[in-house]
Amino acid sequence: MTPAEIRTARAAAHRARARDFAEAHGIPEAALVAAFVGPGVVAIEAAPDRLMPFAAAMGEALALTRNASAVQERQGRYERYDPCEARVAGPEIELHIFPEHWVHAFAVTEETAKAAKRSIQIFDAAGEAVHKIHLTPESDLAAFDRLVEALRLPDQADALPFAPAAAPAAETGPASCLGLAPEAVTQLLERAAAGQVPLGIRVGNAGCLQVFRGTVERILPAGYWINVMDPRFNLHLRTDHLAEVRLLRAQDGGLSVQAIHPDGSRIALIDGSGPAWEALAMGLPRLPD
Image 1 (tube, rainbow, N blue to C red):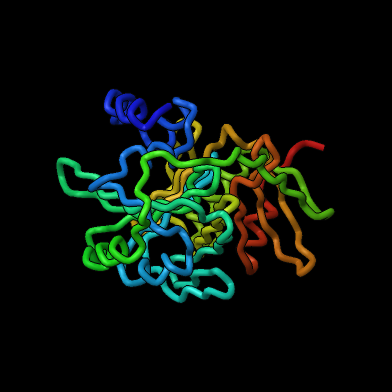
Image 2: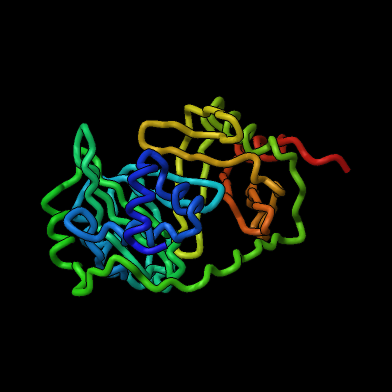
């Protein structure tokens, strides 16, 4: 599709989520964003070493990382970015970044009936979303404007060259791996919420791994989705994509639960520590022998 065709199709389906629209029309999500380059969409530098200091200056924001089967959203600040490790290590937002996959980026301002929504959206070479930074009412808008001014690219083209999407990397588990029933993921979240058991929840893609650490409270199933809907943390996971659920015992004795997509890639990994976590993980339903 040409940028003009994308804009026309989008006008007829303006309520569809960007990722769903892109999949329905067989285009990368970044092609949809780029088609609207202009006053509300600015192509910017994608390098995390350039982006992260400006993200920190914006203060409160919402970090979003996803793959095909899970989305993690965490409100907080982009604090303690280490360029040597390509890592954000704040008390709320924790990211492990793989800079070679941060290829295209845009600063987006979307006018709505209530207020303008602003975000920074980063994509890989194939145009797949790597990470998104959504501003909140508490964000520093002047810092967002400074980011756009400093990182604006000279070429503001509405069409981009994209590489073919790479095949997902299959996840391999250690020898000490037990198969769990698919409902184990939902039960894990529900039992952790009921017992206030602290968790580590990792959701990522080739370019970014986002980590939540803490307790969860509000677990809401909705169709094939299982959702954590807490004030500063949301998780959305498609249970119909669970080809395998594994209980892993690491060499140091730690336990983790790994959710696997049919293509072999990891949807999410959940771990913890201490007796309460051990009891929760070992009590999850297993596959019959």
